[in-house]
Length: 397
Image (cartoon, rainbow, N blue to C red; front, side, top):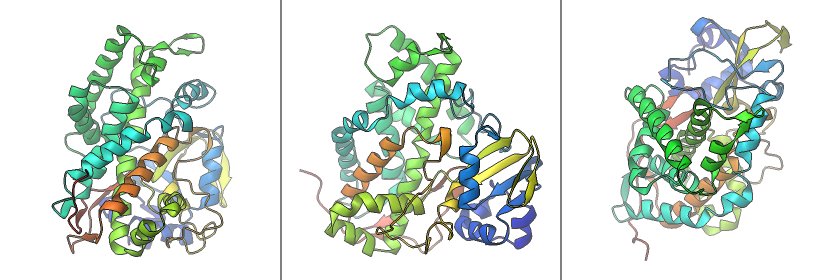
């Protein structure tokens, strides 16, 4: 855990040390510095308690999404739309996106998604060992999204998934080239699709969209598709990687889910709460206000921690424990307010199918290292590697 002085005045969300001690440090912040001002990155507030995080997320008039806390450049070529917008313009894009991620639309992807999970597991199940991040958690969500949601050309799936995954990992030295590749790929995809018969998917909808009564621009269309891609890659991979670590430390959890598969749905909500991978988001105060007795001025940057809210003792008794029988689980893993994740139905389905197959086919899970698992953690959090061993099993029939 980082020092009390660091927590009180020097909090840095880009710190490698924070990545390794995130939950311990956030617990200290909640207890001793729930509304802290950091002097890093030009200065910003850090909010860690559930009530404060929820208030800021829901009050878009006071806390704008159009600007955020300064972080090292992501090399993003275009603005992420609609995440970097506020209502009412934000609503135009959100309505466009939401229609393509309803439970009914997502349900059609279940069969192909399970087939993909099966193929990935078949790639290492006989070996009794793998790097779960490299062999499963990272390739899975992107391959599913590019194929099923975007209907990307099959011969491009592996390359664009690799580049998008590279772009989504903070501080990746290859990120600049990956972002540029993604921009070109999305631009080419949209141009190609303009000259093809409609596929009846979200890409068609983006191309044909009207925003405030005018046709969507090329840059806006690219920004929307870019956010759709990145919204579910590192976040889903991060959840799966963290869940696997927990499975290895607490083998009674996969044993329970293997024995009582009907409990997987409730277990997933608890695992999503505990293993939040979208850990924080930034807002900018649009007027003077007050939180927790601290005066926040117009223009101040505010960083709210979903991962901390999800383990707030005031909202969740015994918050660090896995308890699938919680009477109330109002977790904020998918955010809150107008910017709540549009792809939450898809993410839940991906996690559910992955865990259903993992607990069925991988028994005797163990971490294959005694060293601490390395993490990255800026606004997303994920293990860099999760080497595991397990009882070797057969490939699918």
